[in-house]
Length: 432
Image (cartoon, rainbow, N blue to C red; front, side, top):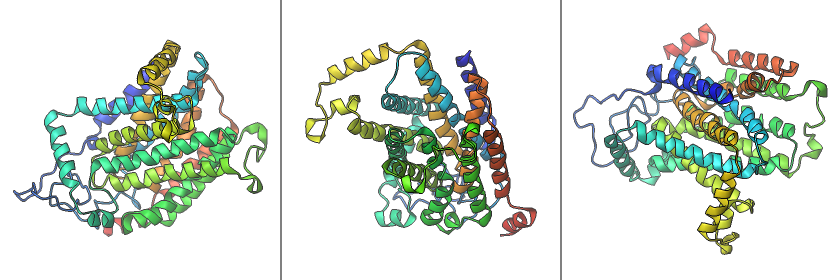
C-alpha cells in the first residue's frame, strides 16, 4: 500500500512538471548568424539560452537575468518550489518506516547508499532523456567554457565550467550532511531541528553578502520580515504540545557546545547551497546542475563519512597512510553484498523511494524552481517542509497533528503572504 502511495505521489508531481511550459525552456537563437563563437567569451547570465557559449545574451543588469527577488513568482516556479518541499517532507516518514521494516541499519551507511542511488538515478535520467548529439554538444560547450580566464570567472563569482559549478554545490551539500551527521550523534533531535531552522534567516543574510551582483544582494524588507517570521513559525511548529511553551530540549545560551555549533555549521552549508544555486542557474542548465550536484554530493559525502565512520566501505578502502584500513576491494565488496542481502524487500523499496522522492526528485524540482526565484524567496517555500513532513506522517503513519504544528503552519502561510509585494510595490517593479 505504501509503495503504491509513493508511486502515485511521484507520478503526479512529475506529470505536473511535464505539463508546465516553463519546465524545459525553449532554445532562443540569437538574431545574428554567427551565434557560435570560436573562442569562449565570458558567459552571460542565462535568459532562455541553452548554453553559455551562445551569444549574444543579456548582461547581468538585464531584468530577466536575475532571479525574482521583489516581484511575485510565476505559477510554474511556485509549483517547483512547493513540490521540492513536499518531496523533502517524505524523508522522515520513509526513514521511520525503513528502520522499522527490518534489521537495524547504520544511519551513516544509509546516508551514503542513498546518495549513491540518487547520483545513479540522476545520471541515468539525464542520459535517457537527452540525445547523444545534445550530450556531446554540452560536453564540448563545457570544455570550451572552462577556458574562460580565471579573472573573469572570479569577477562573475560563478565558474564557467558546469562540472566545477556542480562540484561546488555538491561539496557544500556533502559538507552539510557531514556536519549534520556528527551533530545528531551528540545532541537531541529536537535541539538539532530547532538549530537547523535558523536556515530561514541565514539564507537571506548570505544572499545579501555573497550574491553575485547588486540585484541578488538586494534583499527587500518584506523578504527579511517574512524570513524572520518563517523562523519563528518553524521553531513554534517543532515544540511538542506536552512540553509547554518552551521544552527542555531547546538549547540554552549557556549550554551551547560542539554539537550545537556543528549543527549551525550544517545550516550555513545548506543555506549556501540555496544562495549559490540561484547564482549558478543564471549561467548553467538546471538539469545539468541537478545531476552534477548529486554526483558531487555523493562523492563528498562518501569521502567525509568514510573518514569518520570505521564501518564504512570507503574508510575500509582508504590506504592506511590517510587513516583508512587498506582492505582489498573484493573483501569490501563481499561485506557490502552481505549487508544488502540482509535488507528486507520493504527496506530496499523504501531506500529506493527515499532516494527518488526526497533525493533526486526534490533536487530536480529545486533546481528548476530556483531558476526564477531568489534564494530568500525560495527559502520561504522550502520552510514548509516540516509541515509536509507532518502531513505525510498523518497520511501514512497515522500520526496526529499537534496544536503547535497547525499554528506553526498558519505562521508559515502568513510569512509567505508577507513576502508578496502589494499592488503599489508591484506596479513600481513593473515600471522599473
